[in-house]
Length: 297
Image (tube, rainbow, N blue to C red):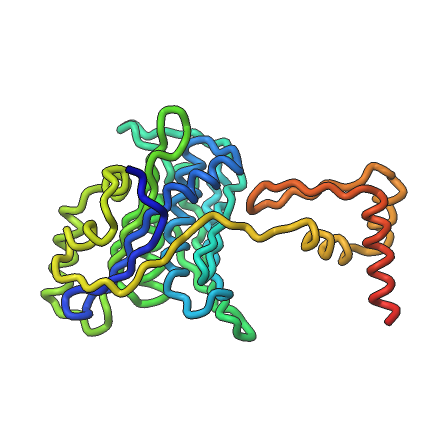
């Protein structure tokens, strides 16, 4: 049985711990296919998308957004994910062709992302200025780095488990995350309880591969957990030919005219989902005409 992608939000230990469990297998597989990712690039991107989706599940409005960017100067290059309050997630790894394996046989995600750089998280809450927090990359393994970010930038002690399991054929077998965070009122007992859970917990990719119901998974480690809600998540970009036409209209006249005179049309590739949009010379001419019609008003 293959369960759907979703995020379950809960609290435990009388509200002293907040828990998010996520299954993201389908959305990570969609990202892998769209970007033609090799296994290590797929794991790096999938882990980043999963935690970003979990963070966005707490947003109040559907149009609020969270973006997470790893710039660790590793071979995968920039790894970026965006998610909104409606459960839409998209992202990319600048180099999708990384396949590195550690001596223990696991994918070398930390090596792919690199450790010489930063994790930057931007929260766009619809205010004048988005909130941006930055922390130094610790291991490049993603979970550790988000845990460090939560502690440094948001002062929330957190355990971040995230995993992506890639089949020998290269497709995604399982992906998901489990995050538990201590609230400001957390007692020493609650802290100790969470530390023990972290020590005994199976790897998240294993838990997801076993097709555990997310509520059951939470109750396995936090028996008293109270489920607060379920949220669906999916890979969705939202780009379109019309939106990119608006971008073309922002080009300087001479650059747009050069494309028109070249008479070969123009192709734009969306970096978030790899969709391709082609504009004929006639369509470029129409973009130019509409641009001047608007400016002449």
